[in-house]
Image (cartoon, rainbow, N blue to C red; front, side):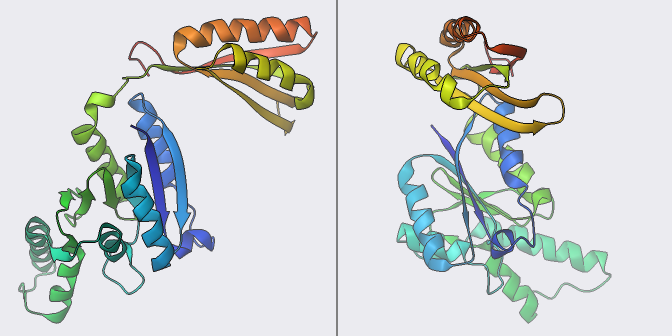
Length: 271
């Protein structure tokens, strides 16, 4: 199964807030021998969000959606998810119980009586209104849950809540996938190289090793290496070893100036 990420909110697109979810999810997946295959940013536009969620549900991928599950007028994720699925919204009984528990906690902390019928408390129950058939994702920060439908998982935009919730989903739902596809990445710094000069070698390697991806990361102003290209291969460890040996041989045959070599990824179930 592939993993994807949808990040919701005008504040990200406008630059008012910087997204932190993408690098964190990459980290969480990498620790488990998994990888993020795609990510998408969507503003608070119900039509675009509904379309993005419809694609996510149809993809068969494991998808995390961060943001927009609150109960203010600019929160559309719950409603868009229901429309994308073609199901009604309903107050989830477990979510209702957790939200009420949270409201009792807050009232006790403030030294006030808990008033369930007070308008603001009634409104807070909207945060537990999910697409019919959803299951909850526990929120260790304040008990207000997220929800899952199939392999699409909805968490708040706040990192302090979203990150442990995503981690819980991975560990509870997808443990059998951890380190199931050993992956390795080997690369070398090529000083002063031009990508056009290296392209034929890259094309030859990809033709000879179909299971391997060749990558090129150029830099023109690196503080340590100056102008250089990080050139490498990634894929199953056994194939990567052979492809990387040919990559080095090809670079040396061309007289390229080589620097440090790097190995990343997981092999034999180890991060």
